[in-house]
Image 1 (spheres, one colour):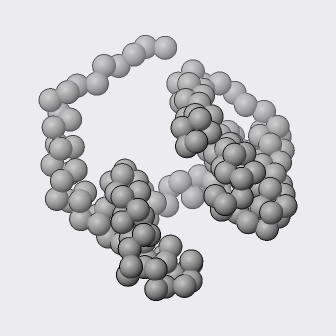
Image 2 (cartoon, rainbow, N blue to C red):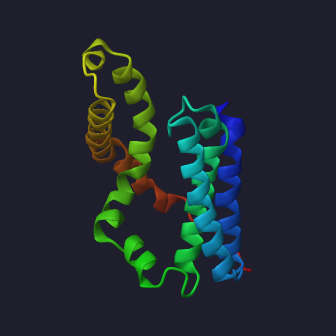
Length: 170
């Protein structure tokens, strides 16, 4: 189920990369309207079943795709002249986000195994609050991701110098 419903988000990312490579111009007003419609759709889907999680089948089937579209449109609006003004650019130029970006892949890779291990463990089953459980898993994922970045990934990134990237002309 995961792959067939997430391919659309991968396609969104590919279209953004393509449009950035070829300097495609977008209509700012149209992007703003689509962004608003995505927010309305997510809220509507969540309110219909009073659930924003994976147990809501409509959210699992359509809602997460709409969230992917919303963030793709957000990125485009940030890049389009006058899309979000300086607010969007300030979000992406935030020092904390720039520093956290180097750990994001390791956190992404390690989060799912941690979720499976801790989410089904006896230690976590005694915590009744879903928010507290989720927060603990997130904190543990971030801590382990940062540690693994420094112990493992950072050393492999040094090997990039032996694999030059070819520059393609437009």
